[in-house]
Amino acid sequence: MATETIKNPVDQAEFAQAEQEAAQAADGYVHTFQTPFTYCGKTYDKLTFRFDQLTGADSLAVEDELQLLGKAVIVPTFSGQYLTRIAARACQEKLDFLAFKAMPIWDYNQIRSHARSFFMASELS
Image 1 (tube, rainbow, N blue to C red):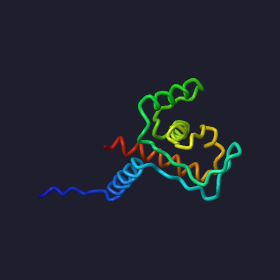
Image 2 (tube, rainbow, N blue to C red):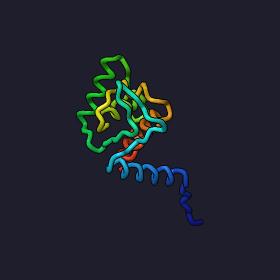
Image 3 (cartoon, rainbow, N blue to C red):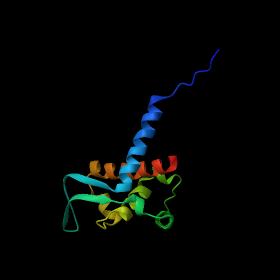
Image 4 (cartoon, rainbow, N blue to C red):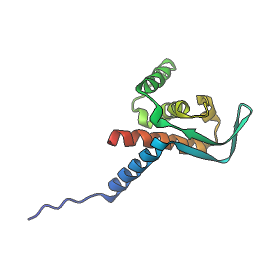
């Protein structure tokens, strides 16, 4: 009896999506707000993120910052606190972490999801 390998199409689709998002992240991710976002007197229509330009030092600095705040990071890829602080470092418009807390939830979730996708794709490579 021949053994047949059954491939899970969901896993393949998730992997393909992660690869595609990683390729987009390498070129930069541009987030366009549903409605313009105002923070500290400045209005933003879009933000550009370059996750590919971050270093291990950025990751460790964010982990250190969170430890100082008493916030444990078990799995950084799934920590909103970690991901949004990393996004702040990757943001070309130089916003601080507090700006992400002030964003509308839809936009915040989109940016956080792109940061997560970048890390997940880099772990698969």
